[in-house]
Each structure stands twice: as C-alpha cells, then as structure tokens.
Length: 174
Image 1 (tube, rainbow, N blue to C red):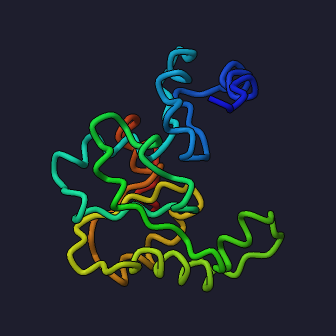
Image 2: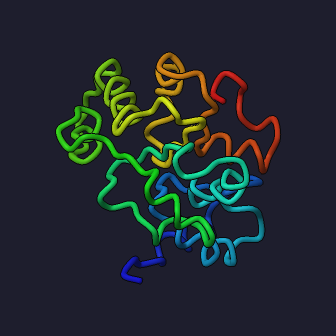
Image 3: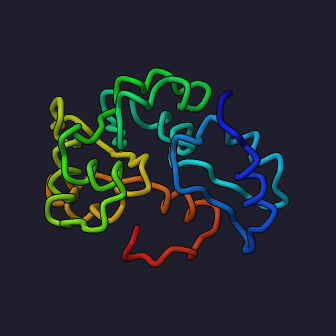
C-alpha cells in the first residue's frame, strides 16, 4: 500500500512489445492492479507460477529462492498459495551476491554468486525438494549451477515469459 505506482504506470504506458514484465518479484501483490492498466499481458513476478505449481507440489516439495527471505512473505504469494511461505529461502545476509545487489556494487564474482545461490537452495535441507522457483530476477543466471546440485525443474521469470509467449526465450536460458 505504500508503493508509489506512478513510475510503474508510466513505464507501462511507454513500454513496447507484446508482453510486459517487471524485474522485481516483490511486485507480485500488484499483479492484478498493474495488469489492469495494460492492453497486453503483464507478468509482475515469477511467483505467479505458484498457482500452477501448487497443483503438482506440496510446500515441502518446492523451494522458493529470493533475495531476502525476511522481506518476502505471505502477502507476496498468490491467493491460495499462502502455505508456500514455509518454502521460502533467501540469500545469506553476508553473501557476495546479496552485497552486490543491495549496494549496487560494480563488480560481480560469478563463481561466488553461483555458490551463494546454491547455498540458498541447500539451506534447511533440499534432498526432498522436487522443484525450485527463483523469485528474484537476479538468480536465473545460476540455473546451471543449481542443476549440478539437483537435476530438478527450475522455474523463474523466464519460464513465466515462455508460458505466456512460447518461443520467446532461447531454450538455453530455460
């Protein structure tokens, strides 16, 4: 309720293309509000896929990885998906990737960032996890590293885009 929607609405008005996406999953609660302002599909967050994923996965079977688990909670999850709050894991507060993102650092060590992402996946045990949802749009570059830890399906903003616009994303990135 405290987010100023004006910049987002302005961006929607100026956007070109057949699909509009945001780069922050924390906008998930605003999906319907923002979509109502569009004359084409809008994806506010990878979390929108939870509605479909819940038909195949229980909360214990799905890991949601986010930038900050303390800030992502029930209010961000789609209606009917609140039980997945227990599935959320975030980057460690002292991780390199979190530091780079939060402090807008100019240098990223991709090996450290990949390790940070894999560590968030492993947090709290992962052996029974059957799928991963990367809420944060900064995490998809590390999907290949996650697949080395566990060869389970990975969902993210790119899979959300591909579901709405087939063949929009190069298969290598899925």
